[in-house]
Amino acid sequence: MTSRELTVPAEDGYPLAGTLYEPAAAAAATAPLVVIAPGAAILRRFYGRFATYLAEHGATVLTFDYRAVGGSRRGRLEGSGVRMRDWCILDVPGVLTWVARFYGNRPIHWVGHSMGGFATGLAHNNRLIVRQLNVATLNGYWGRMAVPERYRVLLMMGGMGPIVVRACGYMPGRMIGGEDMPGPAFLEWRQWCMTPDFLFGDSTLVERANFPKLTAPLCCVQIADDPWGTEAAVGHMTAQYTGSRDRTIWRVTPTEAGVAKIGHFGFFRPEVRETLWRPAADWLLGASEGGRP
Image 1 (tube, one colour):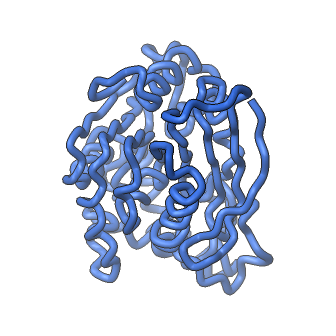
Image 2 (cartoon, one colour; image 1 turned 90 degrees about the vertical axis):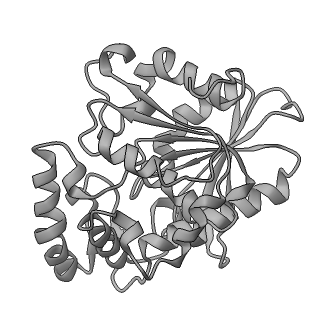
């Protein structure tokens, strides 16, 4: 397996930092090009070990950073106008267009972690996706989260968050367990998390109409000990992909995975290589043709 750094243009031309993982042997003409889309405020390098695993099994894999995050950040975040929707309606469509241009003879498979899963629902060109695996992709309304985490989120999103953004000019990553976020991106995320319908309750987000355009088979991983991606939260989001001809939810527990804890991030850690990565890769790369791993 080899990897190389590159730049992928977003829909509006904004340069996104990416890493391409390629198998050691020439990929078969029918081998998929897999895109791994990060969760909000998570760096692409977090997914590097899973990308390497897929490349070792014959796939070419692309990871990328959203604008104003990680390698795609340009300067200071104070005064940035980047919203969360920009990651979904500008960055994700740009990545899809780039992949279709340079790998148009290969099926495009998508792995979306958290926001990286519902981002494709907002992308106007999501029909390019042939198969999609969502990991902990959820309706982020605080009331669907587990107790007591929902109250911590309510305090952060509903109270402290806007105060911190006003004071700092952005949301420091240490406050949310990730990377620094532009203020408008955090505040839009907050708005959605305060609404039972999440982003579907935002009348200004006309791109909601693109969800039914995604027709690819969809497998959504729901992790039993994820306090954010509960059964209710993942189930509500999965139901929005009404155009998918094959929608399934794969519920996994730490016991089944052979670990003490998975949570919102643990699916991408190598401790679950044999128990979760292997069946996920079989489904994603086509060795398993059923509705779920």
